Length: 67
Picture 1 (cartoon, rainbow, N blue to C red):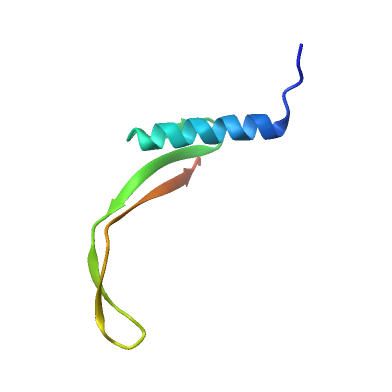
Picture 2 (picture 1 turned 90 degrees about the vertical axis):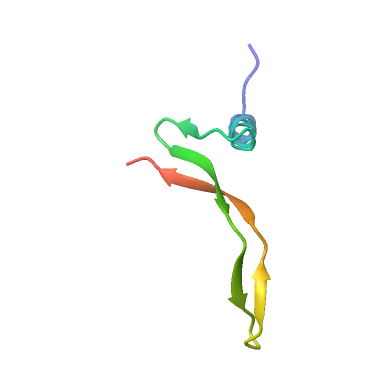
């Protein structure tokens, strides 16, 4: 039987999380927590010179640790 390294396990977990989140699903990892995608709409902000700028919308992967 072939040995499985921790790097291979970590890479496989990362692939599963990435694929699930990109498909719009929350991914629960028992004993660790859950990952999901959160959308932030565009918004107005000010730059360092005080000028108004529009920040583009963005999607961010959010991790919530298991309690």
